[in-house]
Image (cartoon, rainbow, N blue to C red):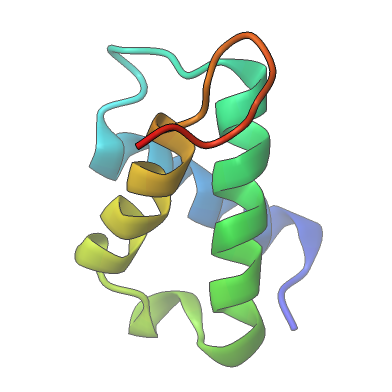
Length: 73
């Protein structure tokens, strides 16, 4: 299991992979992204998680309806 610093470092990597340093996410999107990434980390180490897996988690977060957080397709 990762300690807090390792988890925060991984989240930073995810943000950079997704370009969220240039296009910020909403708090709700970050929460959904972080939850999805945490689920990945329960079964894999950060080194085993590919950029494509991170992108897949963002695809879910990106489809949140901004007003109520429901998924939109």
